[in-house]
Length: 304
Image 1 (tube, rainbow, N blue to C red):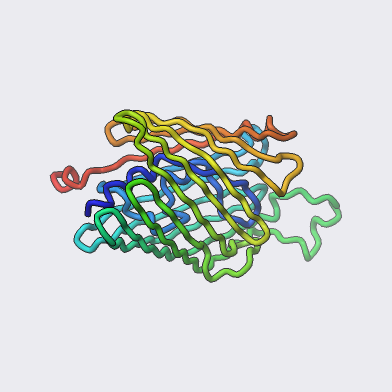
Image 2 (spheres, one colour):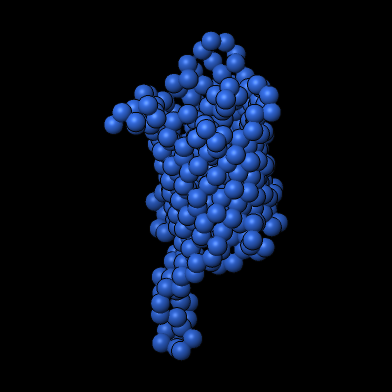
């Protein structure tokens, strides 16, 4: 399938969103592996891809949010399909966390040599937990009352995602919706989220590729738009910047994200940091992300 070989260009752009309670975990470098938000991105390489993504927000602040994503994906050429597994963990604050586990599948259709349509579905469970005892009561008289909970509350709910990607050698457009069956967010599960993005793939010369990106995210009353671009040198080194205005906050009106990365023998390592442009820029600057991935060639796998 000729067109899918251009899909590697999708991995040279990135996005950034704000983190809010009861929403999907938001990662600045998530566009490198969008499987946990858009199942249509499953199987976009010829290798068996292992991807690990970690984020710590406001490092040094007690009980600050922390997130982790693990993806394992593979492309099955005989059935034009990508299959995989995605798991994410989001520590959202004091006593509050969420775990999401899904199997993902994408069917790819070659519309022509230059156009590819991918349709994806994710199915699994979301596990939401809240530990009441981890929170300090303002009124100490509340301790010992019959209404005071003494155990951690954990609830499991089914979870489904749906997504599409339309790809050309020079660009990609993606649309997805997560948590299809959840109309509203609660303490233990996330409501529907809508994602829309466009990624460019501009070959400037033999050494340089420029990847501009436009990203949009909607959940409930939250709307976020992000603009950015990343430069890729000899398909080995990358770096770039992204800007996200926050129209909902007067304290932090916008944020910049800087990212750097390198690929060596199918190992990929990336780092990013956030820089807030408002009154809390010192706190925002202590947000860091790391990604580590490896592409296992199927020919080597068969030999072993």
